[in-house]
Length: 126
Image 1 (cartoon, helix red, strand yellow):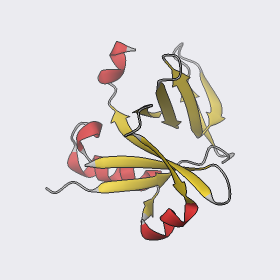
Image 2 (tube, helix red, strand yellow):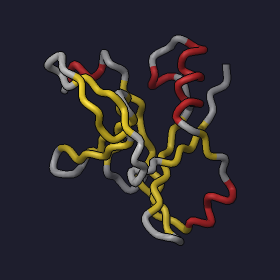
Image 3 (tube, one colour):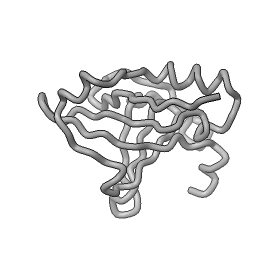
Image 4 (cartoon, helix red, strand yellow):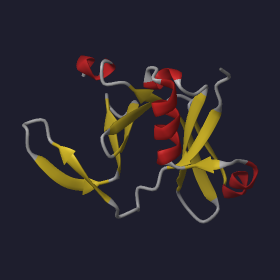
């Protein structure tokens, strides 16, 4: 099966909420799109509900460019990623060739992050 490269708009301004288990057995509502920095800012964790994606802050994984670049790519939503994963029953980091998150930083600028979809078995190392 040929793997595809996908682009998803990471909209941290979105006010949608998800019910998230907090690790102690309790659940709370939190923003669907969250962005956290780890390891002195060298690792960026992107969270969409309960899912985690990571990006390392290197020149090859982060690209700032014109918002016009969006005209040439097809954006997918998180449901697309989830359905694709559910249909192949593999590890999440094997489903796509590459995943890019697009974050709009102004009317005419975006940042493109190459991310890895983190499997729950890999999260044990946190």
